[in-house]
Length: 194
Length: 404
Image (cartoon, rainbow over all chains, first blue to last red; front, side, top):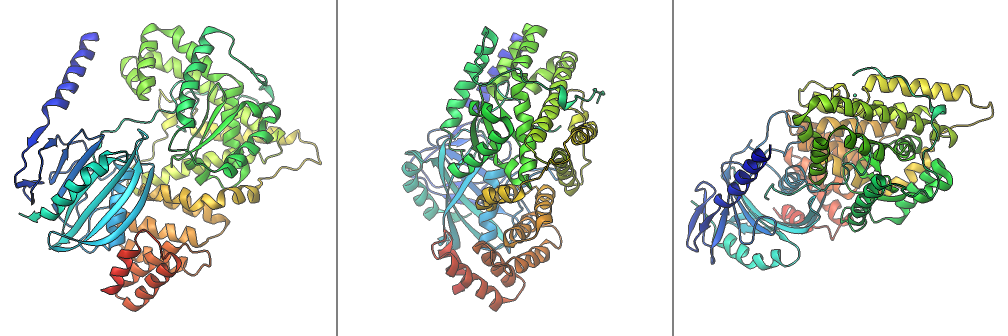
């Protein structure tokens, strides 16, 4: 039994370390090549987690519990922004090309509540923006997951040719979100459809 | 948006959490046979119990400083009032924490820490139903079930203790241990099922002595069973009574319902002719009303449409209002099945007919009308939303929509 536990621990720890790769500060394709962005500093590309969809990519500077950027690109109408089974009790609403701003915002909130386990989630601001050269939405929010850490998030998104393009910054409200925000803003400004 | 967060553990061995889940038959426990094993001001007397209390005190320290607490002294005071009514002077040993969690749950730890989850408050229709759950949890406390469970686990095997300790840190020891030794578990949980029956009986006794309508206890469980059936049906899943599992900690649902009903009748048959028992609905609604939009909101946003619609329709048995109609629409909008756009639009249109309609109902009504081609009606509703909530977080976005 002890040997089994050691094996499990080794595999688990090994998985955590080997899944990360370096993202160099040059123009790079993200989210299965659906978008291109230009980081100004090097980032760590994180391994996919349980609910990540194929057209998703996650970056972090200091580990996903402290900060992270998520890219979702070219999500088709009728698809969800998280991997889920038809009979899941709680499902993130699927993306629809004709969603209103209210629908898009509540889809993102549902993701945090259902897939991340956010019990507290408060919208701080929803305003129009330009993303990928198109009219988009900037959604700012705060939330608390079961680890009790107060976090802030910003999602910038646009629907282009019926497909959803989304970039999200998440960070601990204490220091990490603000520290990563200028780079995130530069990344969203640099983003282009591949 | 990384799904790798650890879980907030509030229960485990520390509290007898309320969950509903039970096959083999148990004899009904008579409420009149229930006597307290702890008195007012009780302190742990032996090493086992002191250790368990210390663990609970550490957990309570975390809870007391949690971001999840509902920081409303009026609501907490109301819950304390219900506990005072149920337990009298002994209620002074209970420390009450109302925590944000949309799931139906409550617990009382052996050191007196009581957790009331918002998902419980959302589902109760009156004070008697609420008191039924608090009474059940008080029953666990008064019968010292936590320490009895802890001793039983320790007596059965050192291996089990190891896994119990490991699980106490993760909240998943039930499942880990189940994979290791299901035979032992069967015996262990048999003990726990007896405790659940005791807690049911004790809860009824407390309700009866506090002049609450004792039929409320069976109503609570009936509502929870029906909600779970509705949740399963909405996903085309077969409803499974988790209480019929061999390793369930709780008595079978049907058996539990029968016992609660029989015990309630037994108590009432002995009641003096002049005794009056009521559900104190007005008092419950007055205390919970300011929080009701939040309570329903956190359930609806889980997009468990069967459970959400069941909850809304159950609350609407006492009358529809703007908030309930709005969240009915929100449930359909998030479910997004064929015809749900129309259902949502109808619910929003009904919501804004009520004087108490929340501002968000006008926003939802506006977008629904625009989506269905009624642009002018939609614009009027969005404008009304901005009149009601000029500083809403999404005001800039709604103004942008109006400008298009």
